[in-house]
Image (cartoon, rainbow, N blue to C red; front, side, top):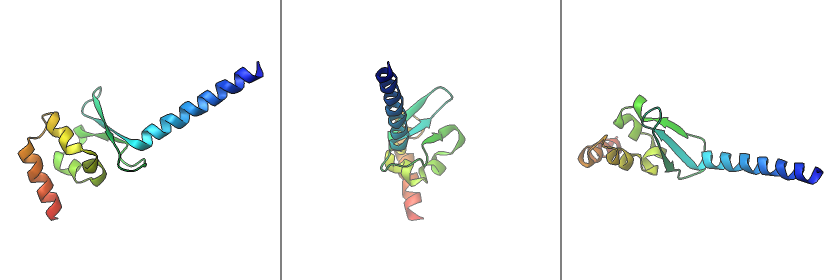
Length: 97
């Protein structure tokens, strides 16, 4: 009986560690209240783990280097929020600053 409770404890600890690692390694980008996408982070960090595109303009969102490096621009094009030409224009303007 004691062994079973110890195994349950190990299972819960493993689940907590796995969930924390998932949050460290992914951006969760919300496009609406119930719709989100996952982008793989370049490095393990909690910065910009949760990000809402409804609260930011495309240009201000793309100014955030970790999100842009993870592929936020391509996601915005896939979602129809930007055209490829508009994305290239915004990225070019950001890179010049």
